[in-house]
Amino acid sequence: MKKIATSAVTLAAVGAMLLAGCAGTSERGGGDQTTAGPSGGSSSDTTALTQCLTDAAATVDASASGGAASEITPSTGFEAGAQIGVSLPQKTSQNWVEAEGMFNDQLTAAGYQPIVQFATNGVPDQQNQITAMVTQGVKVLIVGAVDGSQLGGQLDQAKAAGITVIAYDRLLMNTESVDMYVAYDNYKVGQLQGQAVINGMLETQGQPPYNVELIAGSPDDANSKPFFEGAMSVIQPGIDCGAIKVLSGQTTQQQVATQGWLASNAQKRMDTILGANYTDAKLNGILSPNDTLARAAIAALDSAGKADEKTVISGQDSETASIPLIMKGTQYMTIYKDTNGLVKEIVKIVNLLQQGQPVPINDTTSYDNGVKVVPTDLLTPQVVTADNATTVYANDATRQPCTQDPAPASCNQ
Ligand code: BGC
Image (cartoon, rainbow, N blue to C red):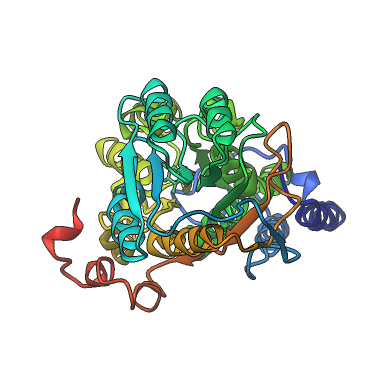
């Protein structure tokens, strides 16, 4: 879906690694890091593997998201105080729960009448809710899809009624009937996760090679692909040069997917993998696409008696239940995608649409939904570790207290 420039950089880095001799180590066995240092590897091998990982991690550009500035004018304007529809998916992570109150508050404060609903029972629920919002006469429809490829008919109804359709956080797939996409940069989220897992292992797990297992999000969520592909753009070179081993052998998005983003599904899969592959070997890292699934992986490690291996685990969403784990080092990192900021951005856009004004976008190339490239307004995600959490959350009244030791009980939700 994305980022020719980044891939070129990655390819260049892989080329450099091949020249540095990383490829020659790819058949080496081992990876059990119970004691520091590679099993049977010479120190020059270790140096090459470390270099390979350092180079891979260095390919990630942490600068602001978005490309060339442009604008679109999808609306000729509508009455102040109009109804605005917001259709959200299931409450699979804290960000969706927080979005409900923020949309209600901010849209009301801007003078609109918000209709905010969750598709608790999945795709048919969301289809019915969108149809009802169209009938009720909303002027803008903001959709965080359960499955972005299953709403074509309802979105066509919305377009036929002159409604502006905005894909929120998750892209709407295979439809002409979407005007724009507003989200944190999903591919970059994945890259930052992959980079952090590598850096975390280099910091805390002794010398490579490292054993890593991979987890991806729900296959029906369009975000799962850019998250996974972004992460693998950093991790795959490590696998290719032999610095990272995946003992389960499960490395495709399909193999590592978590249906419905459900913690129980990820935990079950990790239980099986740990039992089959890691009774003797140490698991150095786990790529997890979000905090809910990171905590599921931590639960699996705990029940396998591996809590003291200090496995490096990634996450996303800055969930309050994960922040204390990050401060303690049980979860290595998360991503901050401030929901308040994303909702604020949407309300700013709704105001422009209401006045029939042009709406600024900053990406006109990356998000092809299968039938068109959707004009996109990308926001920049931020990495959070124990080192910068208090600074990153300084202005977030919900999260800041969770960085304290002990964290208030309210964090553990
Ligand atoms: C969101 C993530 C979230 C996941 C599960 C994704 O579409 O971008 O922030 O963790 O859904 O709810």
